[in-house]
Image (cartoon, rainbow, N blue to C red; front, side):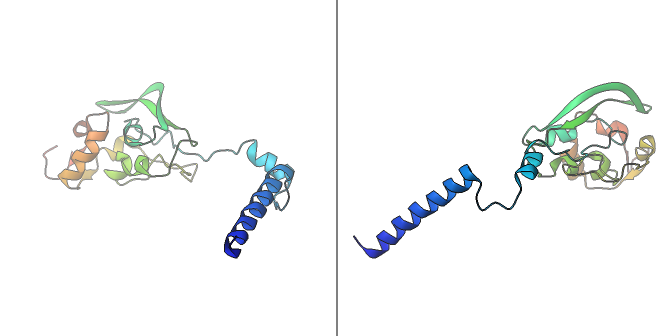
Length: 169
């Protein structure tokens, strides 16, 4: 048998033994058993939705490629003369791949240029104050192609909510 094949066989056998030893006996680990159990028993997931800032359009859920966002019904909240929020997103962090589509397609961020109420990692500050009815009054000046793309993902009539530059609203 060639020496290189013997060395390869030896490496494979020793590697397999070392990994089995690590897995079964816990040798060569730097994390204590207590810490490992604490980690595996559950971690408090990050805050992913600022519920008060969400307009409940469902854009995040529709844009999510893994289906990790579901819309949860809530007590209706009137946000504008012609719009009532009826649901908010709930994210399953175990399914999230951190593509950030939820954030990027949120109209609060993508159209009105305000802090997005959804983010897969952490939305940060606890007390962010914003009057949602006021953001709908902000003029929108983004390309029509981008507006169409975003509108196709939302489950609401976007034109009813926004004031577009150049339109007499």
